[in-house]
Amino acid sequence: MSRRISVGPFNRVEGDLEVNLEISGAAVSSAKVNSTLYRGFEQILQGKHPMDALVYTPRICGICSVSQSVACAYALADAIKVDMPRNGELCTNLILANENMADLLTHFYLFFMPDFARDQYRSADWYDKVANRFRAIKGDASREMLPARAEFLHLMGLLAGKWPHSLSIQPGGTAKPVEPQERIRIIAILSGFRRFLETRLFGDSLERMASLSSVSELQSWQHEQPWLSSDLRIFLHLSDQLQLNQLGRSCDRFLSYGNYLSGGERAFRAGVVDATGKALALDPALITEDISHAWMSGQTRAQHPINGVTQPSLDNPEGYSWCKAPRLDNRVVEVGALARQLVNRHPLIEDLVSSSGGNVQNRMLARLLELALVIPQMEQWAREIDPLQPFCHQGELPEHADGVGMVEAARGSLGHWLSIRDGRIANYQIIAPTTWNFSPRDQQGIPGALEQALAGAPVLAGETDPVAVQHIVRSFDPCMVCTVH
Image 1: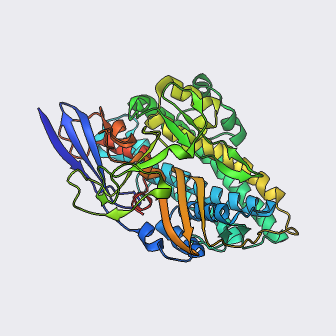
Image 2: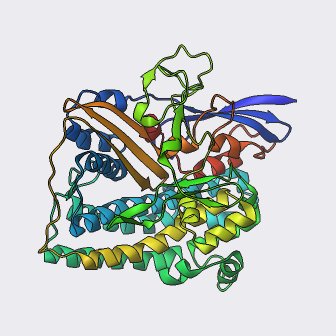
């Protein structure tokens, strides 16, 4: 016998989210994901001066505002045809990485791990130790992590003036120069953050973690020390106990725009990996948005975002979400750290996905791996800043132009598409990472990435808020305010 339950609103999520589940027996048979709050930034931007977008778009979200700033700046730079000087690239990358790494760390400690302190796990032999460390607000881990995160985010003051909603990021670079003494402080802050990661999160050097190249190497590393010796080993122990590598598998197609521009190249490459594991080049012309199951009107078929329409309407009888359905070549894709490092061909991530696909364990491991990869890169970027050289180039805004800005936020691929006509914004369309992952069905009735991942999730007897569903949803790290921008 089947039954329906509605899970939500979710706590520890940026924005409003509701998931409607069809339960058959002891498992989810189908899911519909509802983004419940419409905000309308794409409409707000119409008719504004193009440079005003640098003020509006960061306010889409308070925890990933830099990602929105960078995507907007890239779109304007594409329209203006202006390049950043080397210092501008370095500082933009450092600001973006500062936010992204803080988000990855926050997600692990404050959003994901507290679910293991739920009452459903009280009978497990590991429960007391894990709950004491990761229980929300009261756990030892948050008391250790939060000061390290706060000190790490001091980089924002030195590089961008403030966070969130900095105005420092510009199409031609960064508006705040870095003085020699500030550069020394930046390097010191990164060194302190490295110490926290190596001491508490990993229990090993960042370079050692980044060099792990296979599942067998990861397992050997895991068992070198007791499972309570580091927070990553605790997670791996829980994953083994609960088989998180078998939970929440989605479409196994992955997209990344690549990240951290430097001289026309990206430190993490752009591309697509299909369900067979084949790496493909990214063709942005194949990106479309479908509104067939959204509370939207104005489009009769899927459109590329440059031609997209954002027109809210409750008259769509098939609609069940304010989220559109992005597709790449008419296919569902997953975005995020797992996609980013798979497209970037990191050998550990390739082996994990080859073994078990995209799942809860692998999404979390990719996030933590990225901390080990990016912090040393940030240290190198900081050393390369030359305070005597320019940080920003200027360009002339055209009366008529189109531009696109693509960037990787912590949660995945973020794109801004801009059309300028008669010196004003004629159209501005955004596809956020959670729009990709939490999309509703499309015209073919194909569920989005999360909806696919939830199918088959176990539901324990008497559960009205299934813990497996919580793990799967959080493994994507949703940001709903970006989704319904």
